[in-house]
Amino acid sequence: MNGLPERQQADCGGRRLSWREAGHGRAVVLLHGISSGSASWVKQFSDRALTDGHRLIAWDAPGYGSSAALAQAEPDATAYANALAALIAELQLQQPLIVGHSLGALIGSAFAAANPDGVSGLVLADPAQGYATAPLEKRQQVYGQRKQMIETLGPQGYGEQRAAALLREDADPQDIAWVRSGMQQLDPAGFLSAAWMLANDDINRYLVRYRGSLQVWCGSVDRITPPQGAATLAQQQDATIRLIDAAGHASYLDAPALFNRYLQDFTGAIQP
Image 1 (spheres, rainbow, N blue to C red):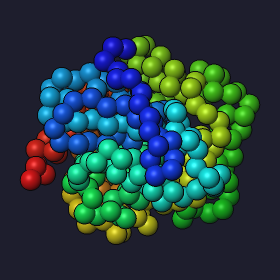
Image 2: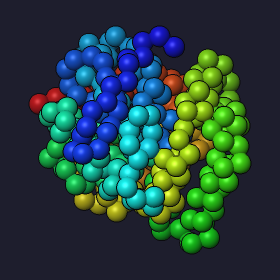
Image 3: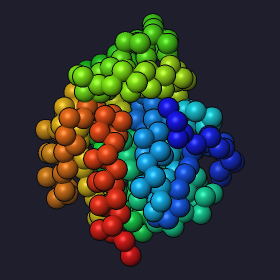
Image 4: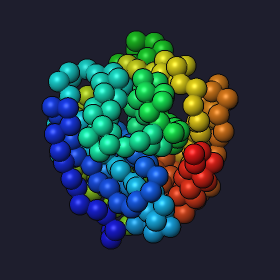
């Protein structure tokens, strides 16, 4: 797809991190989910109406893209949030809006909890909430399924098998191909560290410490983190819930016009 900025990288607090960026204005940091990377935000980068007023920065989480892996194989969201803090410091971003998609919502929540004055707001898009409060058997299943898939199929086969599930049933074949391509570039070790975090952390342990602007968005036909769960989370946090019509889990790809409009609405509402 056209409109994707080149990947950049730098030493951020002693760790190599990579990211893509475009535009100018209000800083917005985009955090991808467990099966993707910075390139997944192509339809945000290519939206001129969005980049005209926003500096979009999409990172590659540790263990993704060109970003160095975390030291620990079994991290919690705080470990990723610390890496995010180093990138934000390196880029000298002042109170960015954090948009966390899926597993990125957990990382964004951990960052916002630790740096409440360092963000202008937080969006949890199609949020993965973590399984720390689930029984041990469930946590082992969540991790074990992903471990088996990536080890058995490899990134190539994993992308072939799982890409379509991230989008709506009648998704654009180009979008499916884009998701598949992102999955096929996964580093298995980085992916498994993130899978460990998903299975053993919980978004609520961070959100309880965050009292800033918060919205929860969800694709109306998201089969991976269904709207019901997102609505419950929003209710618990006394936050606005916004459904993204005719969008699956990768709502920013399935319905970019609506996703991007919600983003502009939110930054407009929290403009200093």
